[in-house]
Image (cartoon, helix red, strand yellow):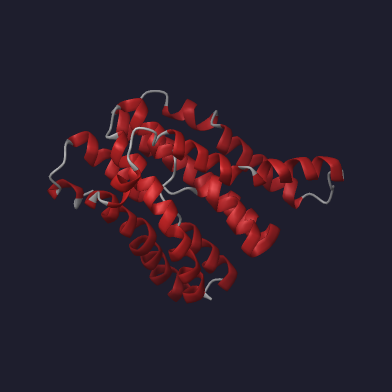
Length: 220
């Protein structure tokens, strides 16, 4: 946030700059990617991460963007993402297995998260020319922070701790996900430079196709 103060941008643009660099696309992209790379155990780690993520997103991002501090606790305890994360852990750990028809239904719903995320991003970009996505310097700066600097810092912090290599890889991978589509929704709701939010989410999602495989090769 101290770095943002020196940017020659309006205050509302600086606010969305902070949230775009801080809050990534954990659920829509993180869940299916983690499950595909690390299986059910990896997905469980991602769900637990998402619980903490949603807590801070609702507690900080919405308050920071809107400037309002009322009903924070209520918004946290009633958030569907947090409720789903809490319920998912005991269901996963329970020895009782759901019938195949229910499992298949949930699996199909989960596989829809990535396309839905891309549809949300696309719908918010209808007023932006495709070429403009790649010519916004601030979008490139946030994308570099989101895809390179944040996962690098996460890796440097986790490496000396010598925790489970799989958990380290999952945390670094999630740290390197693109800016979340919820940033666009917040920017639209509170009039905080929707164009910058849309460009950054689209650009970071596109460049993730190259950065994520490279990140996974580094962390092993």
